[in-house]
Length: 429
Image 1: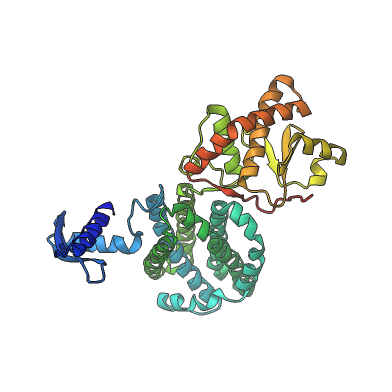
Image 2 (image 1 turned 180 degrees about the horizontal axis):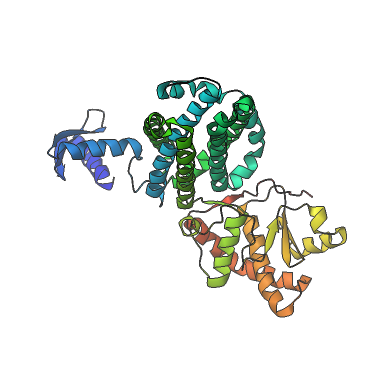
């Protein structure tokens, strides 16, 4: 871009001096020749004038340009390629499994459809009970914001559960309506969870304000490999899975591949928002070694199944309990004096430290409280008592390191302007 700016300045200078500016030039790079030319309105146009690469390379590049965002790999964060690879395989397995489940439903209803008919009718069978599942799952949006990776995996588990019920429906054809209804109910919940978590996952990869480009390329990948998966499903339904025995063997295998791919996708995703688990891991690394971990550093350390587990070395902090259950009224005024002007309160109980946030607290407030809890835990090991004096010492230590800690966090790409604690309780005074 600096080179282009110089050319534009040169062009303007030449026009002022009455000289004819250089209006075009050619560049050759890796067997590709391009013409660069300034138009009359000052815009720079680029035109391909020669490409001596083999046809195979040109086709591959054209294909990659349609599924990867512009400027890849420099326009995305680390882990995008692995995420994309497993996402493609996930869609193939999911679409193939969907074809088999639809064929089974029609068998259970007393029909004998061809694989092509099963594919066509699959769009109709997504209605009904699915809408009820969508309505119920829509109430869990705050939890999905806090743990998008966990809910994305759960969405696919629910989807495969619903598909599994449909595959098994021929074994109990007298319960066809119940099996189909429950299957579509689970699928409805899965659809909402998958869609709700899509944006935070794409946002974690966006590096240059290219979220729309990432989203568009992601949808292209989904469409392409869903079509591939449907083709695989039709082939399986015509051969191995023509019988119920074949479905009982291939169905679980496809489901295992599907869930494994989704898990690997989520492990590769560097979510850069603060939630209780990621905040605890950041604080633990900082208190232990003085290091500030980046989203890419922590992505493989996150516990996607049990994110509420306490992280060792981070103060054993619990977030989101009701204020009335954490702090007695007589203790409340004392704690407000210990943490003047802060939007968090801390209180120790049963080996854990409960942190309650004010209604408008942001990520920085949660980080401050978590650091105090971690330092208080260190001091308590020597005194064996989480007294008011322990909290005051920990608070003073936090204030000494926090400006540098926060600056380093932001430079690593963390969003500290919000704290996603799901449906945790907050207070207002």
